[in-house]
Image (cartoon, rainbow, N blue to C red; front, side, top):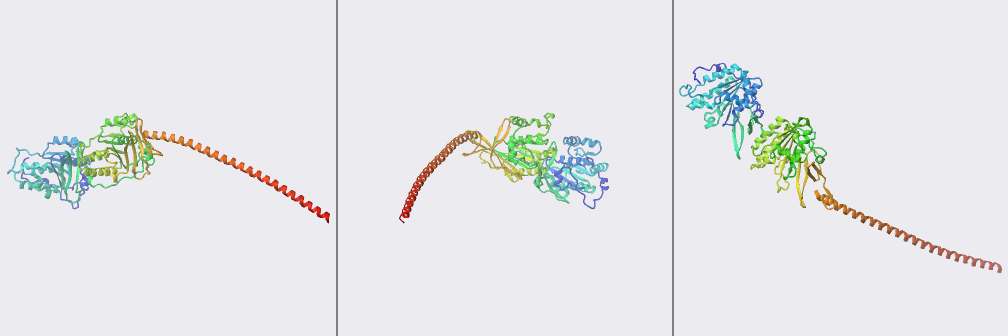
Length: 579
């Protein structure tokens, strides 16, 4: 880079600051723009600092390419990487950098310091550099500028005071040109602190770093300052992978859930009946808790199949089984998930409605899991997302951190209007108590448990709660059969409630008891009839005896009365003769 003592013509042509503040300039990263309350300060320099691998260049490229996609132009000045490497870098993240370069929408300036270039008084003078940058800005009429790895200039200055003065000049030059600029710098040797970039020069400072905990790395972003506007004050994890940068302000979400009266089928008639005659509401959060082997994944697969049959998309994230294992295992009970995958025959009519993403819970940090899930949801727009089992994410030393992450995840999914089905593994000594402690976010809670009795293991299912639904209060039997899943009402007999084969044995016992009771009832009723017949016969006999005695007395009375009458007539005749 040749030095020059001429005045900067680009600086002379710079336009003055507008009288009223300009609206923020979007970076193209929605999460970052939300944290910055709209974007970077327009027409001002913003500093992006962080160690190697934190994503500085990717964020800068995203900022520049977003503007180009919106019809603007951009200039990228590199003090570190070669232009060819930057083009490969950009296209690796999906940015059409070479096409933009060929079309004149993008200009890359190679300003890498060379050891054999001229230095004046052991100092590189920046006038020529600024003139070249200004010329490129004028030619493209570009409102966006990136100065990548500006800390590479440090090797050209022996005196830190000279470097600070020159850097101050660069920042002032950016303000005079009213170009929105991102400058990137590393954290090596406390470069920012020594030269005052952070406190005295930049209008906006974004700090990036890598946190490593339990051998898992998470990238974190923080807005150190932003002049002329508010900004999020927390630390925000973000993703950096082949799909680019993804950041979401997970520490500042508010619940704005979409309410729906639509019901999602479960594919299990008995479970639908327990939920009031239909499945859960769309957009609700469902938790299935249970011990190992109680059928959590089987119920999840049944619900996934039922939703796929309606033509809606299901995102199945498995933390323990691979896709092939899940398909094989569920096929043994009649749930054919393969027919819904992308590789299925399109003639089925449901191909492509199931997206399965197996991932090990220990592969990423909690925050990275959260962002990957949310990004997949925003890209795929599923009707249902299944997290099986979500308890795998909480099996870390940082239990409180896992709980906070799960709460944020459930909030964020609900804000997207997506139904969430999470399964939770309960330990055998948990006494059926959930360790996730997220019941405040759960709309439908289904609990499964094992009942071991007389050498047999039975599965039981209970609906603990279902907001807005008239649920069954009964504990029912849940069976996993080769032909599918069944929910059976328990047998409630004289000896209590029984399940499984004990239900059949108790039913047979009760049938024998009923038959004996029927015989006893018939005998008792026959005896009752006989007693009544004997009583009736005795009554008839008594009546006959009474009638006979009454007749005899009547005869006696008649005879006596007859004799009395004869004697009375005889006496009357004698008296008449004497007279």
